[in-house]
Image (cartoon, rainbow, N blue to C red; front, side, top):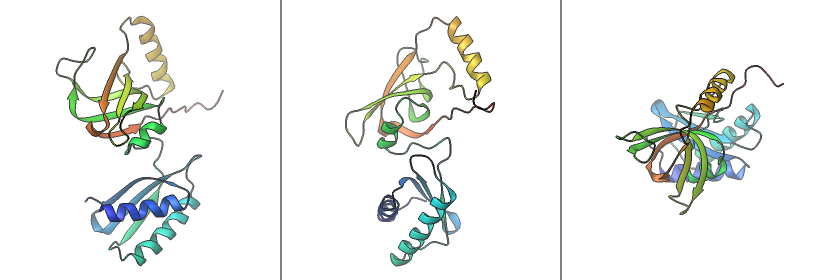
Length: 186
């Protein structure tokens, strides 16, 4: 179910007023409202509790019909929902799914709808900016072993990197691709 603009704006104002960034609001079956928040340095359980208590009070005052409220962090594969999310994460590895395939030099003849690569730039109109990214050959390497394989493949490959640009409004969904290292710091 879609969240009304009025509910979204009320939740956004409350979350931002507490010093957090609103990432997403979902209204799910059985009266569940799921709110995802973020801040520099990450979200703790105390942060979720603080926001949950404030939202419970605000939704009671505003007479919002809900049964349960869930407040959480976006996780390592944080969704990118608004143009400002893309701006914030320029230089990061992302996965983007478009509503329709895009075509161009270096892409398959019938186009490509799912894109993995590095987010290079976000430029233009603040409501519908152009997003530029450099595609990885197959998908973004997530583990050290995948990174080693990708480095070997890249060394052997002479094909130039493919860069694509598309409008924000063409994005169906997008998220960060986490850079995970399970071996610990060296």
